[in-house]
Length: 121
Image (cartoon, rainbow, N blue to C red; front, side):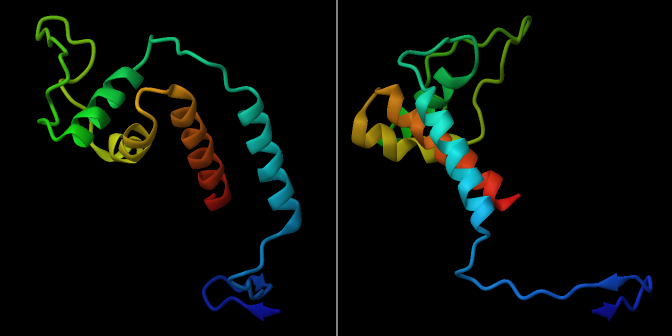
């Protein structure tokens, strides 16, 4: 136990080893991953921005201009921006390169990212 210099509260100092992971946390993350993997379904409901992300990933892989997605932007009624930031499409690009337009590997990649973000939090 150590007394905090700024607020006077007690702190318990614990060393977390780089290789050590809380077993309960690992089991919980594995259960979440298994649940999400078990509930992945083929196909997609195209009511969101995922198609634009796939188009951007396709442009990255095929060497075309990033913003060349075929989206017709209407400035009077903007539904979405002309193009999205390239972070998620860059993460989808290797999956598109390996599997083409197969959505299941892309969804599995999203499960991995979700579980990794939970582990980081």
